[in-house]
Image 1: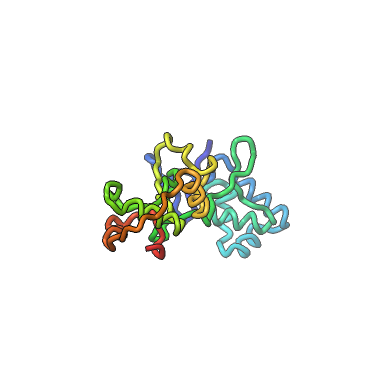
Image 2 (image 1 turned 135 degrees about the vertical axis):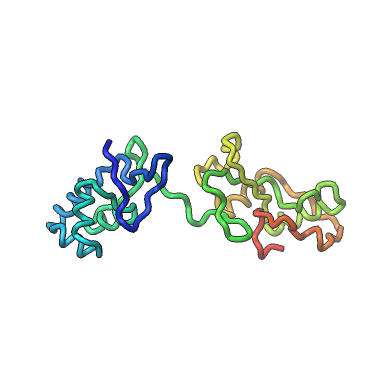
Length: 209
């Protein structure tokens, strides 16, 4: 397989032996030429539409350089084509969901990790305190699950519904509800410090406490 260097000004992924080709198994040269044929454009006309030089287009077609994935998607869009990931059977692979649950700082969980709910939220080391049941009941009333995440493949089955993605917040709440019924909320006052999360946990939303 021939390799090609990224286009000037664009960075390719670095491998142990230098930049890796961005095209992989994609015939980038053939795609660019197919776009020009569908649009009936010369290299100069395509370059003008993309805001690049004619020599850049020529280098793509001769595999001396490779456009970035974003640029390649733009090239294909000019001919009403789409650049989409597919698996080895040709089935389309959907991107990960944008509206999946996030942590208290609005950060996404690691893409390779499994995210699940493990009952209702309690602060660390609260299990043996007299107000632990009250906190669990309060968390259930608020819809506040104890969110866990792990990159271990051994916990893949914990994802709600076996979803091959990160769950939404509502799915985590439903998962916590199905896994554990909250106890009746006892008449115990919860000290303010017990509701604080000194570890800046990923387990809750900032507006909840």
